[in-house]
Image (cartoon, rainbow, N blue to C red; front, side, top):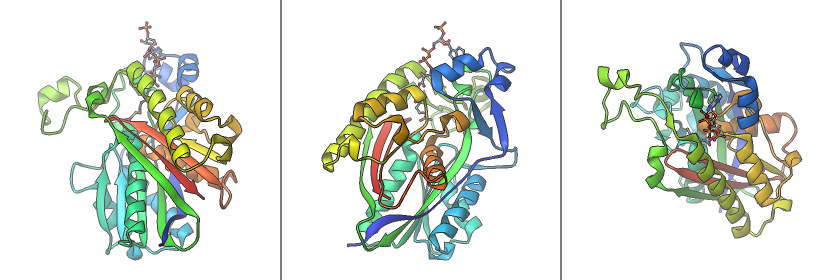
Length: 326
Ligand code: ACO
């Protein structure tokens, strides 16, 4: 049976930087509050003409080049995002056209910040079943477009960016070992973007009521995120016969440094074996894990055969984990 192996990885973040000091001029906040409560120091903001598929295109080109795979040889494009260019066509189809990936079947995944793990898990199954040889998995977001820049409780948290991996069917024992996905829709109200769908279609009223922005009860989300991420990290290790000491690199979703610390403690993985870049990018939702994986690999934190643990939590609620033999 062929293994799903990450053969190429890429990331792209927009050039524009918004620092905590800049935010002090926009809302009633402070660099000190943001840094101590979240770990975030700055975030990237897309240019006016940049969309999620534009950021994804740059990340995908790097990933394809590293993998040595041509776009026309892709069997699937799976695009995880909460900020697609538009409701339809899917961001995956738009990206397909930009890449010239004529033979790929394309679809988006809506699982908030867990989207990349969800997409990874689907790609894993397509490869293991023998249905695909090469899959492009993308996580890309332009969250700056759905943030209420007058709401200090959310606007300081999010940033824009994209990450992409090529997953190929390979012989050997490297690759995705296991993925686990969980959801609990009963918590949907705690983190949502209510406007623009079939419930509240776009109207003057939805715009006046700011329904096209992220609404989050941060404190409640925080508590659930900690517990869910801790539990699933422990569960995936145990299920696969590993312990924290076996993990070479923990690459968690970068939403809050305090959530990451809680996960580290629970599964007993020290800081020097955890990849953290939240200070530079904030929460880039579905893009955060592939951006972190790319940076870790570029900076020499990832060597062949390392055991990598990825864990995420997001809107839905959704959460998930992936174990990879790099
Ligand atoms: N600057 C200054 N003060 C602030 C700010 C700000 N930017 N934001 C909130 N405050 C104030 C609040 O008004 C409150 O003041 P009060 O005590 O006078 O009422 C105080 O700070 C504490 O607010 P809390 O919300 O309780 O702060 P908390 O410590 O919980 O931190 C945070 C807030 C950072 C949002 C945290 O709850 C968090 O990280 N939540 C999880 C986010 C997450 O993981 N989301 C999931 C993924 S996102 C996705 O899927 C799209």
